[in-house]
Length: 399
Image (cartoon, rainbow, N blue to C red; front, side):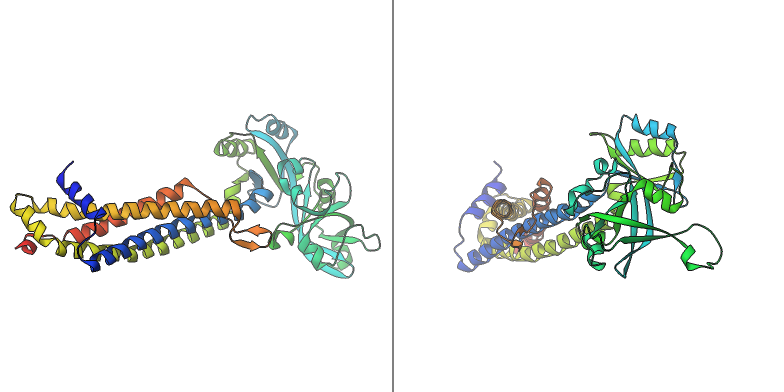
């Protein structure tokens, strides 16, 4: 064991004769413990919020979504359907059509997206799990599933045989409209279910059978506005994207689930970085106490350092003593704070100490990455702070 580390260890575990130095060192250590614990807890909270926020996207978005590169729709041939069905990477796919239309119910009107889906949709996309009331629509019928926000805006319930849900779809064509009554295709729909996810999605979609929407839009039987794809376990997203683009001769755009929610991912990443930087600043402020404690220790041990210097110790060895002492204080303080933070995270997960609502605990998630980030930040900043303090040891100080 080299003597700088031996002396640094002794200085770390023993008390100084000066009460002031002991108090300053204690405050510095407590500051490191608290800041490390706070950083880990906050990062764990944001990990939980990230998982919670993305869970909505995971419940409503497919693994891959295919759009036309130009226009609002594209044609899919029998050969292309066969190749999609036999792909080694694709488990299932669903043909869909989305169009913004006008809905009317009991003299109230609402603009939303009419989404036509085939029988595979419920297997590709877990939207059906979000049914709030009623049941999913049956293929080949005029049944629809509406969002809770739309149902609320229209004051609409299920199985209301006295009032019909009407949909008005603009007819395709060009030129001025001479007769407004002839400008729309109209159909009467039967609400069979209401889904509830969040405010945005609850006001966005009305699900109907694909053939019904194709008829309203005057689409061909093989004309769709999108494909939603479910991948097989272990399938490569990039490989499937390339496969689909090649199949449709690069006339389509393919987006992954993350790309479909690009703005949400950017927002969450930005917030996470901002919170990390804020709490890193708290750690830096706490480490100023460590710098002060080490400088006070250097002045207190000046006579001992002079003795070591006269015995042949070099200045760099004397600096290493306090560099190691500060690093040890930082490491063990950060470790204690991390243990306390992990204990709090586990307690929140197991016992729901903090609640958002009476039935919902505040989301929090334990991740090893957060452990590495906290310890890496504490050790690096502690080393820099210790190096700044230890640099005060010089030959002029000992003269």
